[in-house]
Every structure is written in C-alpha cells, then in structure tokens.
Image (cartoon, rainbow, N blue to C red; front, side, top):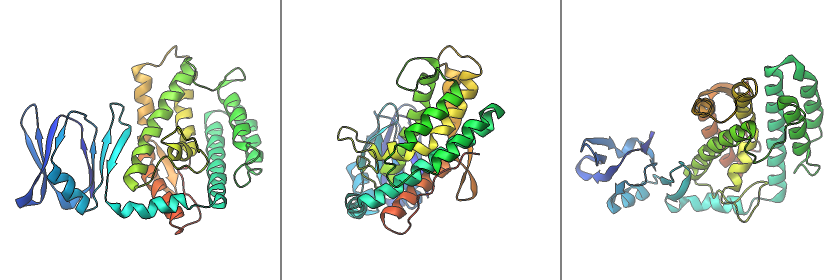
Length: 295
C-alpha cells in the first residue's frame, strides 16, 4: 500500500475498466495509472488540481482517505468514510485520568530526548543533563508542577546560553527553531488526520482557537531533533539569519535516525508509528504511547 501525492497540476479521475486511479498532467498531458488496490491514501499538495466526483465516491466506498493541503502543506480538509466515528468517540470520551497519564509519558519522553541531545552535543552540558534526569523523576500524571517548563528553561540555557530567551522572536536561533517546529507540526498534522483523528481534541493542549491541539501534544518529544540541528547549523556557525541552506538542513530531520520501540528508523517512519501507537491508546489496546527516542 502506498500514499499518492499530487504535487503538480493534475486531472485526477478513475479508469473503471482497469480499477485504477488516472493522473493526467495538465501541462504536458502525460498520463499515469495506479491500481486503486495499491493506494492507502490520496494527498493533494497542489491547489489547482482537479478530481472527479466518481473518484471521491469510489475512495469513500473503499475507506481510502483524501487529504487536501494548503500552500505550506498543512492539511485543511479530509474526506473519509464514517468508520472514523469510533475513533472520534474514543477521543471525546477519553477520561481526564488517561489524558493525564498520556501527558506524563509525553513530558518524560521529551525530557529524556532533551537529555540525550545535551549529552551528544558537548561534555560541558553533562551537568545540565543530570539536572534534567532529576526533574524527570518528579513528573506526575498531568504534570501539575509544570516540570516540563522547568526542564525546558534549564535545557535551553545549557544549549544556547543563559541569555537565550525562547519564543516567537525573529533572532536567528528562534527563527530556525520556529521554522523547524513548523515542519514537524505540519507532518504530524497530516499523519493524525490520515489516521482519522480529530486534531482539535488534544491531550494537554485544549485551546478552543487551535484546530491542531493534538499535534501540539505529539510534537513535544520530537522538538530536540530540531534543536540539535539548530545548535549545529545556527548556534555553532553563528548564522546571522535563516538561510535556504539552514532550511534544507531542517527539512532533513525526517531522514534522521531515531529509536522507536527498540528499532532504528527514520523520524518520518517513527512519526507514522507514533500516531498508530496513539490510536491504540485511545482504543484501549495499549496503555503507553511510544515515541521516537533521540540517538
């Protein structure tokens, strides 16, 4: 099974006699056929493509989701069959206790990855890594003492210096961090929506104005993968701005290796499995959310 991405201006339809998806390029008129039986999902990343209603009906009958993205590849809408109602009800009926337990696990994994990042970049940050280990042991269900915030403050001070202030600022470090986090967030949004989640229903993030609360929960443990790139490409190199080369390095985070349930995978592969793990938690098939580990 594979995902089909529409990245150019295409006419997308169904060729019934061959049970195939038909792609006809609007510019050079080239055609391509893909067996419907091989398709896991259809993702439109080009906004001026065309698709037939026949295709929509056939894909819904086969429970093949269709995802539409904006110009920044962020998902804006999804067409899928009604079987996702089960997962929606599981999200809505999730108890506070379960959410608190999931958030506790996310915070602990985030601190673990922050520690691993500090231990990898320099011997000078070992003491800070030890402090993070101490903080991790204090994380309770729901993190009522906001150990996550305390750990983040200590972590960023060790990573970028005492004067660094994390936020939506336009200095080189924050600009690179924000760009990298946005890349991760967009990919997580896609995975959540393709899996059938309602992304506005979060575990810890609960803003009524945020349509992607759940993505902001899932991303937490993955932030150190971006932090390490920014440390190497911006902090050490004393970069004066967010260049195209730095952006390219940040995009390569998806090809970076990590550990997931003891397996060495790319971050991209592990993201898909993390979302599947979250679904098992909501369906009560598992009590622990498995996330990528920094190596």
